[in-house]
Length: 296
Length: 295
Image 1 (cartoon, rainbow over the protein chains, first blue to last red):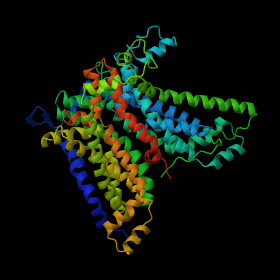
Image 2: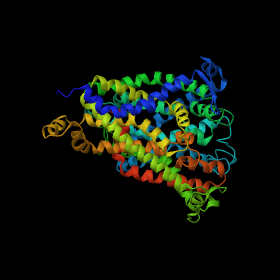
Image 3: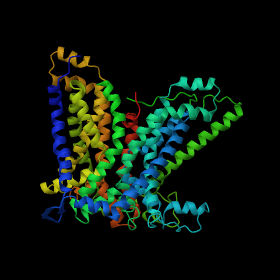
Image 4: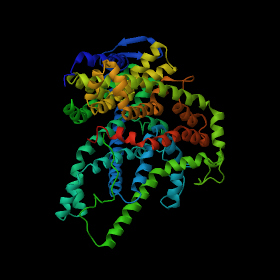
């Protein structure tokens, strides 16, 4: 094929490229520049070059470190539970009993629900006055008083509540990707395991699970990145409170920008955040890029 | 594209297991009931939300909470309309999401076609950039965007929303569309060229119509990103161009005890999406498994 021509490529790509230069690349450069200045949003004239002061301030501030720590807890717990639940559901559905197709369709319908709506649903259900979760626990005799668990106003539970909302929202995605992965495993591998007389557990351990690892890695990394960026759910459920008990990086940066008006410091944090996420995901990029490189 | 195949009634996960029929049935029963239990656990909250929205307003916050409405009522929906100009918010969301979808489809498919057809090394550089952008946390984009929009005096305008959503969606649209274009044989382009089409003509007349399924998937995802967005809308809009998500979240602060209208608004916002994604699930699945599952 003699269609290779970077001039033509550029012509088709130019509109999108130009748009991304102005509205993505330029803002990113602006972000890096702003991170070296002290900027008060309310007083735009107050711009002052401060070098690395914003970075030092961010990295030595307890609230930033606490938010970073909370973010890590959030990622590990939420993605961990999602993965286990998603894997169980995918394995169950892959047995293809009558009606499994229907259940799969049902389970996939929340895929497009806004994180905001998930936050609202759980804000309502976890309410310590009229929330149904506490009442169910009460009826099951797990707790003695229906107002006992203060899901959203107890500092030790607030982060857990946001994780519950996240797990509910994104487990279907995990299930979908893992199920697609399971169905992509060649039948012959199961047949040979059968001939070798493998038990169900052995089949899972030596056939299903190892074949799933590439798919699972990508799914996990997609979810880790998404969980790291979480904002809506936390904002709706707790706004990072009570205190800073459920503060994650996104909500903290949002507050630094809008409540305290410190655009410079917020920018410095945003740069740190980007560097961390890009480091984590460089692995992911290498993995996802490879099929395309083969094609091109 | 990776597609979920229609599952044949075999037992891939359980293969290699040939016990007595009785034991097999017990296992099957266990699998089915566990699946149903988990499915109920995941659908329950949403069903509960629907049921609550259909209760009379006072019953929505009653103690003890009830599962089934004593009488079905649209009171909460009426309350929702009375409290806030929710219609306007929905209209703003629709405009912002719709226009940014069209723009990102246009820019994205042109760009993806260029990268897919005429370049490999250049394509990979841009693809790397595109992927990097997808990894950047939203809040990090939001901060400088807010400064720019503030500087341009575009705060609280639909134009600002459209620009922001388009800029986030273009890399994503390119990423999705490259996959679809790569699957269309180049003979299509050549046939169109032989028949006297220009490069651009070949793209619009031949390639684009052939890649309609890809366009549909991309359209759904770009639209949904804007429709579901909360962070940017919260940051950029304050009154005139407030979107539905920001509007709904305000039921919590302004009328914190009146959960009825809030549930009604959440349903009005998400049920159309649920039903729609039910219908177009094929496209959503192909978009979501892209990158994770190879063909």
